[in-house]
Length: 223
Ligand code: DC
Image 1: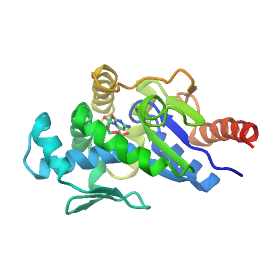
Image 2 (image 1 turned 90 degrees about the vertical axis):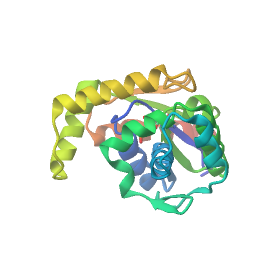
Image 3 (image 1 turned 135 degrees about the horizontal axis):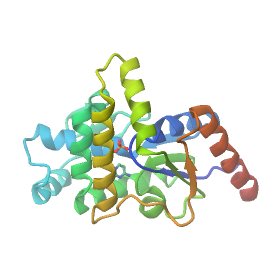
Image 4 (image 1 turned 120 degrees about the horizontal axis):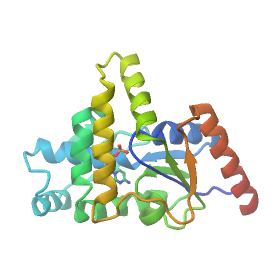
């Protein structure tokens, strides 16, 4: 069956990465977590002691830096190879900061478009359906209430043995939602032709089932 590209956008902690990972395994597609690329840039910029809002220095640094994504999701950036380091709480807000910068977005979007040229990719992020892959055959906007997302994140952290305070997680989610939807360049929004999936009252299996049926319908039409 001919492969297509699938765009999954939505706010933070909506489960985009878990859903994309599962879908990729079921469909034999490749998952590209674009958020991890913004996280890697934030990590690298901080390692060079450059301020997160110094666009000129950051863009200049990136110009001289090789950025690549390995099949297992490890990001190679300059002399660093990053994976586990990218998922701390602190790096989330730093990633949101660098993602505001036009020059950073331009560089990462270019890499993402090159990777997806081949088809058979599931990209998850904030601007996939609107900017990175405006012609993606399937576009999903996966969201859930801030409270549902905070509850899930609290539970996940506690299960991993990480300290978690629901109220604090909720306020961080609300702050990131605000920052991601109000930035000047490519703010988070639902593409006109994206299908809205609200997972507030659905578990992971139900979300997967729903999205698989949307994809199958599209693939049948595409055949
Ligand atoms: O999906 P995530 O939480 O790993 O993303 C980290 C930050 O990067 C998030 O605050 C928004 C930003 N981001 C973006 O602006 N565009 C993307 N395609 C992916 C992430």
